[in-house]
Image 1 (cartoon, rainbow, N blue to C red):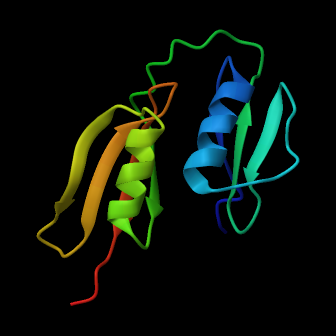
Image 2 (cartoon, one colour; image 1 turned 30 degrees about the vertical axis):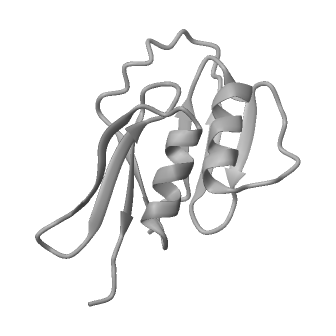
Amino acid sequence: MKIGEVCLLTNDVPRLAAFYKQLLGVDNDSNDETHQFILSEETVLTIYNDGTAKNNRNENICLAFTVDDMDQEYEKVKALGAKVIEPPAQRPWGAVNMSFYDPDNNIIYFRSFPEK
């Protein structure tokens, strides 16, 4: 068994989808007001409005993405105006992690695994 899809529920699909498209460097034809596919390889990332009101206090889930160039991604996150929780920092196990909020206050982690 494997995860088939991760879906972020939101009241504003175009706004949140635009953020993730810029963040992840995705250029696709998904422009629906209710449901957009952002990533469609392996595990799918979608943005969806199921019609219920959201409080944007998504404190029980986060997304983690592995990146190649942490410095470049950190600059992109700042340019997008995302609120940085923790800038890039080396972890004892060797990874470099950073965290920030998306426009709906979901916590996002970027991580890289520099070669030794």
